[in-house]
Image (cartoon, rainbow, N blue to C red; front, side):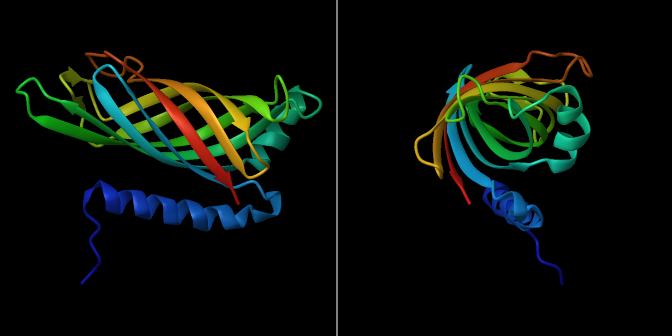
Length: 186
C-alpha cells in the first residue's frame, strides 16, 4: 500500500518538504528563504506558502551575461497558494494554485529595500473560483513586490499579482490579488 496525501494541507507539506530538500542542494549559496503571504482581492481570500533560493545557473548564463554588478539576482521560487471564495450558488469554494519559476531580485533602491519580479507558469486545482471561470487549469502568474529586510534573516513585503491563462483558453478573466509577505532566511 502506498501513502496517499489528500487535501490542500497535505499538498502544502509535501511541496515544502520537496523545496527544503532541493534547497539543501544549493546550500552553498546560503540564501534559502521560506515564507508566507496573506491577502486577497476580487472577492477572494488568499493564503500562500513559498520558498525562494538562488538560481546559480540562470545567474551565470543569463543575468551576468547582460548585466554587470549585483543589481539583479536570479532566484527560483515555488509557491503553494489557496484561494477561497463564494460561488454563484452562495456556497464556499476554493482552489489551490501551484507556481514554480524564475524570479528577479532588483537591488534597488538598496540591498535592504528591493524589488522582486516574476512571470511563472501556474497550475490551478479547480478552474472555477468564486464566480469566475478561469478557462482551464494551466495559468500564468506575473507579480511584483517590494521587500524590506528588517534583519539579515527576516524580511517583510508587499506583493501584487495577476493570474490568467494568457489566452490559452476562453474565457480569460484573470485574477488580481494583493498580499503582505513575511519570509525568513535559512
